Length: 82
Image 1 (tube, rainbow, N blue to C red):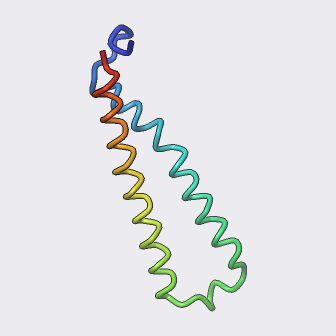
Image 2 (cartoon, rainbow, N blue to C red; image 1 turned 90 degrees about the vertical axis):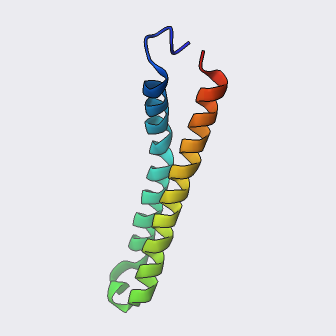
Image 3 (cartoon, rainbow, N blue to C red; image 1 turned 120 degrees about the vertical axis):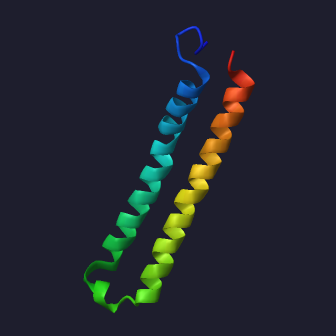
């Protein structure tokens, strides 16, 4: 169907990837902001190793989402692209 609309395979893959990244990244960002708000005024009392661990885990989650979404989009393009 996408080929009939004038989109080539690469353009369709790019659009699907962009669309499917929005919600997971929004969820991670919302979680990080909520966690920082829950700390409140005690930012100073949080150890630097805890901050490093939190940022490392957040980066790992984003990387996992990038890999997963890219894989799912490629599978969908291969299976349903006419």
